[in-house]
Length: 145
Image 1 (cartoon, rainbow, N blue to C red):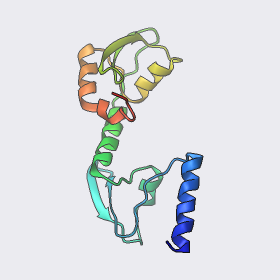
Image 2 (cartoon, one colour):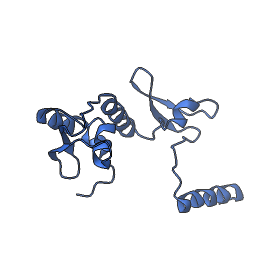
Image 3 (tube, rainbow, N blue to C red):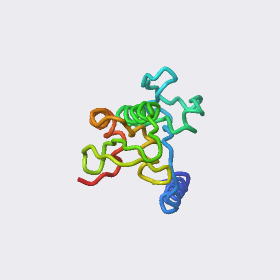
C-alpha cells in the first residue's frame, strides 16, 4: 500500500468512526445506477470526468440496481399520501410484524407522522395490505427477523 492509498484508508476509517452518512460515489471505471427524472433506472460507467452532481447530492447514485429499485419504491410510496383527520381511525401496514394495524391519527405521534411521511396511512384495511405488498420491503432497512 502506497502513501496515497494509506491516507485514503485513514480518511475512510475516520468517517466510519465518526458515523458520518456516506453517499455512494463511484470510482473511475465503476458502474453505477440512478433514477432519472422520468422514473427509469439507468446505469452508466463513471469515466472520472462527469456525473450528475444533483443526483449525488440527493443520494440518487447506487452501487447496485437493487438499491436503485428500493429508492424508486420509497419515492413512489411517499408521493401517494392520504392524510387522516386528527382523531380519525386509519390503517397502516406494520413493517415490524408484517401485518395491518389501525390507530387514531395524532399529528404529534411519531408513529402516525412516520406512517404519513412514507405514504402508509390508508382509509381502508385492504389499501394498507396492498401497500405492504408493494412498498414494505423498501422500508425494512435493518429489520431483524
